[in-house]
Image (tube, rainbow, N blue to C red; front, side):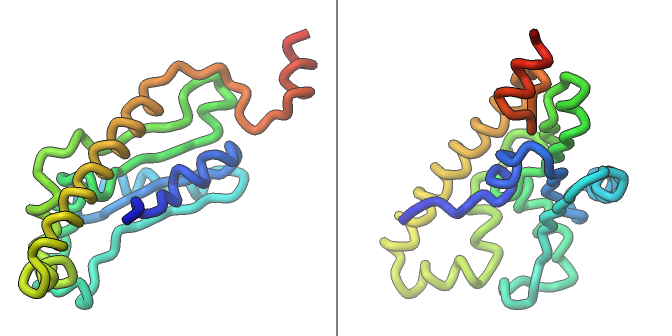
Length: 167
């Protein structure tokens, strides 16, 4: 099994797109900040929002709590990537959530879409759970490293543009 695709990281590679991952149930202030920044950015913006759904097999009135659990487990890291910061020589990535504080299992098994496999094929479910936790751990370490990097400010520029400006 391979890791889930990370749309946020893929879009960051363009260097000129504002992108944020939000979960209103986990951090409403971060959500509003991301929406305001995305709207103010003079260029393409993308907001990836965690949206709970009845198909997840949760008690819908607890949807916001489930969003918090997704963030707390590291399954849904909150971040903002603002190319305007890069233009100012600052790291464009802001990691808005804290390191995972609950295991993925505590989030996932509150949802029928994950827990039903434990009844039908418990060995496979355990293997997939371990794989998912490993992927979350690796993704979190990478986001931490990216958010902690010093930044030179050449995002979105070609080699020629960067060389011309430094000459």
